[in-house]
Image (cartoon, rainbow over all chains, first blue to last red):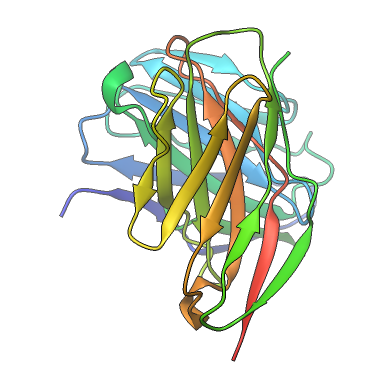
Length: 114
Length: 114
């Protein structure tokens, strides 16, 4: 079945450590996104990518980095510069066709600080 | 700037009754897409319903329907015959046909009471 796979489901970060969240899709979608979800704040966009080897900052990109070396993969690194990383992270993808535009989501990664 | 506002942080409804969740948005664009996403306790985001702004007819999906008022920039979700499985956080969102940008509200937590 086609879909988006995020791993791990739970991740713990020590202070000063960089951690990487994985996101893989087999939907052949061009666009991929990373959102951060905090209680009461909805979804906030961290980064998005419309095409391989290109990505754009979202509203809260500071302390995060991404890469898009393959169409299927869009990993997110939470760097030590992100001082409040505890949150639920959602990866999503979409087709770049206006007639069928909608977001497909992965099952998320809960990141906590030790 | 594009914004989405959900003014009801929490709502409850008796099983088998009808409930309406409110959403307003702000954009200067004329063509866009509107969505309601459901996030149950599993935290998997699920698309409930989608509306294209150029279509006057309100979208329906089984027990879910919308009241789309373009001039008022309002997009409410009506859930008929509420079921226990409808208990979830509901997010209103919209996107523009270019740029692959999606904008989310802060969500409404709906509880269906048996």
